[in-house]
Length: 342
Image 1 (spheres, rainbow, N blue to C red):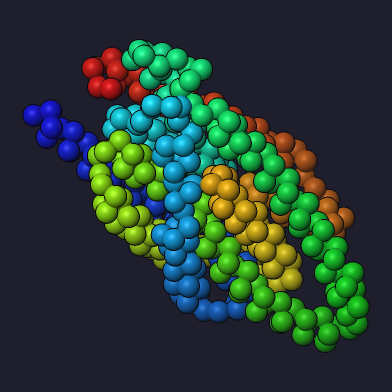
Image 2: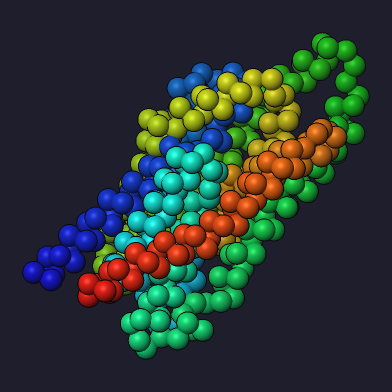
């Protein structure tokens, strides 16, 4: 009976992990600038963008997946199935609450926060593990530090890139004809930048891959099954964009029809470079946070007015996500322990 229940629980985790991949695609807004400028047809953009994000998740996400699924844990610690279940329930619950409240939250911060809460409760109440050795604190510290550094680098990179392009090229344009011709050229560059960005969005948005790596690390699935489920996640992140992401993309695209392709290119290329660097360093970060700061960097470069009140409110929610998710997950896992499920 116990083995049957464990097998059932693993199946539940697999379904939830795949569903998480679908939700990552469903909430991806990267294609919005491309759709807003009308460079290519909407369905074509969904297909190409979905392929790119799935490609990135399948081929470049393993480093981030290992970080989430094993490397931030202390020596000798592996996730149990109930620990992973608590992490998933907490992450999904907090993100749903945030969505219903209209609060922009990070799935990465929510997942890492949930892991933190679960592992602390595990170390305090199951015995044999001290909280001081429950984590690879250097790795966890690097992850958290990257959450603060990556948006700031996004702001700085966008600011510098705009200033360089403006000084060397944009400022030399004379008359509407030259400006319009230039922007048409930037639409092609925007297409390349968005496609490149989608690859690294898929590679870095690897919370679902982390769940499967955790199952592989604790022996619940073998290596072949792990890579099979990585491929399935790639398919479902594609389906997430094509089936559900179209609504987010279309809504955002309708709001940025006045944005210049040159501005979209600068924002997308800056954010994708940050994502690529962090992914290659196996650091999971928030794509949405980086994009917001890239937009902020562009506004600073163009000397546009900035709504600091809205930015402060958004930043407060970002900071609170980690501890709230940790508390949620800690209580959920403590409930499991209370009923004898470790």
